[in-house]
Image (cartoon, rainbow, N blue to C red):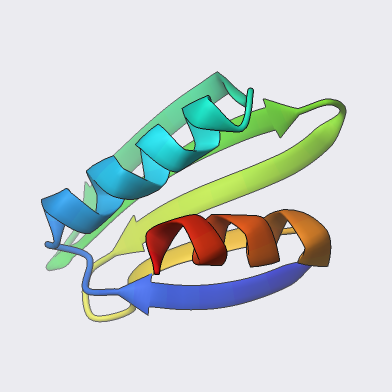
Length: 81
């Protein structure tokens, strides 16, 4: 599993395009959670793609990241390019 920061946590268009890419690949959302602690906001989505876990995370000051197996990550990045 590799983690890559795709962009800013407030970039809703990028988050939306990433979710669309995952859906087009056949992934399904299995969990979603988030919270606020002081000035930090955290949002997490957990996806499943044929048994492979993909985690999308938005965190204040940290950005929008994806954690996924390398081949899945490469395909998502290709679709976002």
